[in-house]
Image (cartoon, rainbow over all chains, first blue to last red; front, side, top):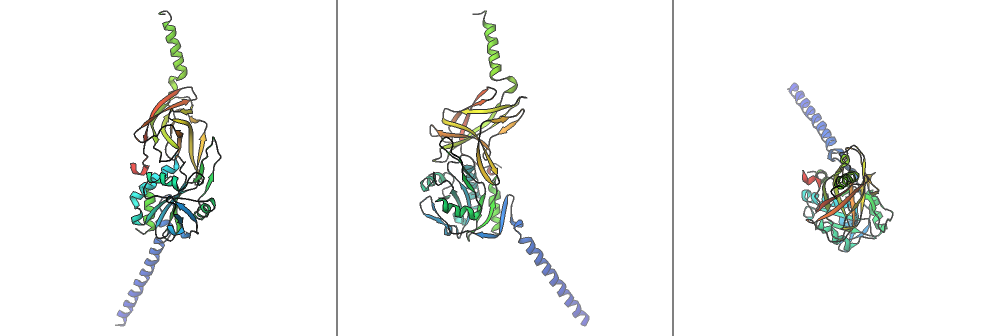
Length: 206
Length: 150
């Protein structure tokens, strides 16, 4: 009887140790940013909250921090006079939209113009539906743009004017903002639609 | 007249060899122009250049009746920042294949003189340092991303 009780206690203890070890192993395996990342993706752990900022969208509506809340947002910085990398990236985002979903799935795609001297609501409204009717365009004053670019670590610089025109050098990355308006991840170029969609799915735990 | 014919042929052959040495005929493949989104005043053209010869050459200029100005550009991503760099010329080393593709080298086509939509095509005249000229017809296409071609 006493021996049986001892065996029972030992078995329970052994089971307990296995459960604890299993839990710890599972936690280590699940938690690190590395486990949910895909190639070219950097996950921020913890996510970095964005400050207040105020831009205007293509319909002249305020586009601020609140517009990022409650949805996942893919954000890209560029300009409409950009002949190569911006249309190339917007085509990739159109494909991400096909793979990951759009507004109905709580995902939005935002093109922020860092060329406010040439781009405004009208320019963006004309330009973006070519890529996808749901895409949001936003721009604003340099100070407000700076509040957003600095918070996500995006860079832009107006190039020198040659023959009456200038280029805008800008970050090639696509930024992923979580539904609490925090920078959650960024993707370095060259961009791949399948990887961009998969990165979000991993963050969502799918 | 008949008497001069062999001489004229010789001159023509000589001129032809000066314009495009048989050894150094650049080949252009898969030329296309990305259809511009509405409001865009610049378009990009892409193609593959092959220098099958043993002499280096350079693409030095591109002309088209459909554009005011064409520049050879490189999109460079340095430290995560995309920059467009205007190039004076695009080097074509011996036996090299140089590809202009979205996100990399491209021709920047300024100020289209007519509205260009997918399905149309434009003429590009490529001029090389060797003196050779090549005219290619490039279709205007809507761009699809690489991922979707798999």
